[in-house]
Length: 367
Image (cartoon, rainbow, N blue to C red; front, side):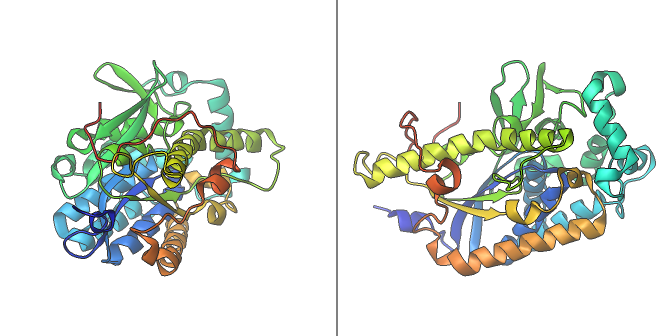
């Protein structure tokens, strides 16, 4: 019988992990840095990735690059993608003008353009101020990403989340059905863009119901180790007092809410296994880890999520690489053996409700 330790290591001796990538606009460049370091370290094998918004874009770009030229190709593709959307990149024409209006390199808190856009989105919907549904990312993503290649990637499983506007439920798109519309749906902020309609169903940003969604990694992947790359702070020391800061904090709490609930479920099942109340053979123990950009990124305001300046993106990438390097130095030996994130302490304050379902021990097909 194959042990859990053997399941955690593939035939090349690499440790298998699943990745959970949060969205966060330009702060997704931190995640780029984490992925760059993980790909550089050939001791890790990525079995599956769940992502939303900027995390979904990182996942799709990584998958295409890996299919083209392995780890090196994935690193090069990620670099090329982030450079392309920077103010030093390849966008031109109408798309560049829109990006320059929104992603200016000014001081964001005091930028007249930012203040005007912030005011506009509070008093008008994108159906009013953007009736033609102009989204500069759409054409650029088609140009940058070969979605046919992404759909053919079998080395790693991709799960991209979006929120069904009508039902309020999460929708998981699988790698084999991936198109530019699915990626845009995952990154559709409703106060900036009209809902993305797929098969007559409107979708908003996946972060509202899963930032990112974790359950596909339980049901569809065999790796016990789940690595969360977090870019949205769970905690902040200061109390927001301005209208803008209050709204930004509400968004952070909202976009972390579904993630906290899923990690509570993982902690609950692991504790029942520890107490011998669930049989190890029938229920799965998950080893949860976190590379936390929340604290490093907390010094940057929420407005900097719109900053596409290339030096800024490189700064965040380097923060991500350093964070991944530090994690691997401290915890590589723990992978396949134990989780390194204290879920109760980090997410629940020790107050756990015993009302969540158990997780299966073996992957099964998603409904």
